[in-house]
View 1 (cartoon, rainbow, N blue to C red):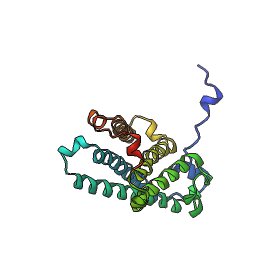
View 2: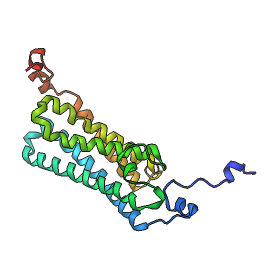
View 3: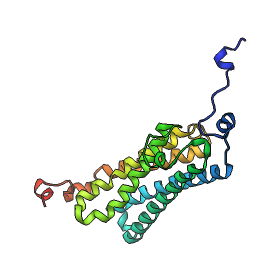
View 4: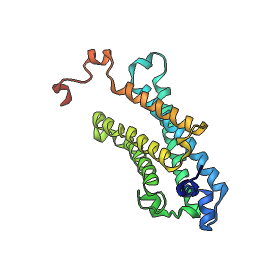
Length: 217
């Protein structure tokens, strides 16, 4: 059997990987790599937890089984921890020469040279999540209903972060523990979001989606 030229040609290395750094003759710091990987997985797990706890906090069905104040505290703690680990994950790339990321590229989405779209999605998702978190301080000024609409942008932030995780490295696209973790996290958030947007019978009876007169209050 004769192999074609395309089949014989070695595949290109993953941009920003150790092999890519080796071929570019650029220093690659394994310690920074391990820190970036650990903080990324931790931030992702905490983000999934924060989303699920947020849904539990909003649904009256769970209030019979759990203490609302406890769930609220857990939601705030996991959300803040996710932002901290996400920020640390981003900062590690300042110390990885092969990525050529500076402060501007880290703050402004889609301005980097390497993996511009995948990295930009992660930066945009993180910054949107930070904005959603900071909106807590504007809750009284905005009013609860308006603030809640802003807060629900957290779902969009998670979607952007998931796209970043899925596209920036091929590992989540192969069958391995990391891919399974990413898939389970995404599936859990999708289920939580679906449960959240489908009105329950009790909410329909209570008129939560309510009458025009209530909307103007």
